[in-house]
Length: 151
Image 1 (cartoon, rainbow, N blue to C red):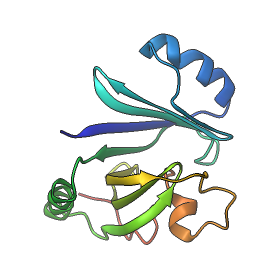
Image 2: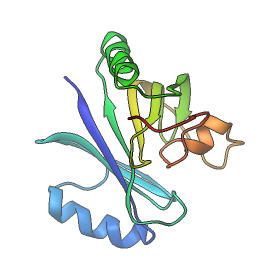
Image 3: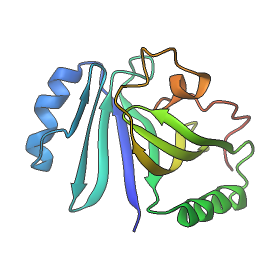
Image 4: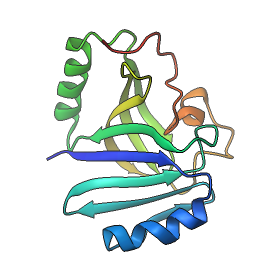
């Protein structure tokens, strides 16, 4: 099974953290200084909010979490088949609160799209720990190395 991931930008993170639990019937399971995430089971999706993305509101990035490496490989094949120039691959990267294998593209609207398979958690939030290009871009509208949008 896959899990959809949506992350809108939230310049006032505290207000959003107060707002969304009532909408989804759950409090965030992960909270960081600039990020919060909950994993809903019905419907099955990750919902995160972030002050990243240059302070804009609205979708920051959209992702789909695969339950296995094989399913992730299939997602990458679909990115390539959709004429996504510059699919960016990241392996075993620490981002936010998890370690994952990932593939990134931009859709025709310029929104970052991520396919990921989580490998485990990390004890720190990638931000503030000498981030690499990939770690500084995770969960933002920056797709490291991406050349052009899909389409």
